[in-house]
Image (spheres, rainbow, N blue to C red):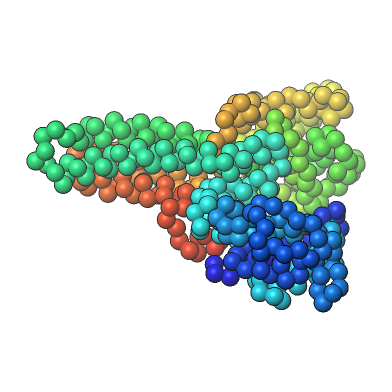
Length: 446
């Protein structure tokens, strides 16, 4: 982190403005070599108009922002050159800076430096990328809470409660002769652990909601051919995304689209009709449809209202019985011949509001109305959720130890383990490989 890095922070494409960002001790010096105004003695957090020139050739008319350490995103000197958008001009200026002492930044390296320099913690760092990638208003608000530190504050509060327990245990172990100290007993720890367990369960439940907000609901539409799967997709998306015909087996590969319900994305996949077939291409599509069931958050099984239950229908119902699913009986405008002793939702794709009952069922299954009204201080990625699950596992071990009257000093080891896990969560301690992996998923220039 002793060198100076540079990257294009905007999309490298035709546009009004491109921003080239530098961070490091030589940021001002490098840009100053080619800028028509002396930047060495300018005030921090100021913007300057001029030209970038190389060997008396004007490369572009620019605005240069100078932000001096330590009050910057990375806590290092940061310079941002706002040039005209366009691939040729932007790349020419970037290459100029790289030939004169700046190294091309790795993906996420600016945010990584902010983390390593103590400007932000790990949850705040990950939330920066979540904010960039947010696709709905709800996911934007949740990511912004992470960037502002609201989520980290929640974790730190829990960590402080654990430290209070650890401190009291330590005093009891190290200074047993003092009579005025609080005597920590298994009963006292049990009470504290029960309260913490309740809080961590709430954190986990909220985290699962957070993942839903961030990633959306991966929704699979399955059924045998000609039950109206593609028509349902088209109606939900309000566009002719999938080809609809009366010919069975028209859809042979997956067709995807997204909609938003109550601020939550539905990543919808329309699959090939599932049936026994000798057609090689269609058979591949059927196998692909079945394989996607396991990875979906929600499966919408479509049945025909005007046809009796077939062997293919039964096969699909059996394959999805352990999944979160909605059985949608389509074509209710036709005479009913379907007999099924299961909870179903009915509708059709003919009427404009024919799928309202289906949308309402999705809201009910995932408590979307409840998520919309919450404060959105949620953890949301797999690493964070995995850590909270590990914390709850350790708490279960502590409860078992308490039931077996294990000595307080032995129980303290597990309590410290939880404290350390939460420290890893916010980046108080970390593994270099983990940090490299996290920031490698960031976009270049961030």
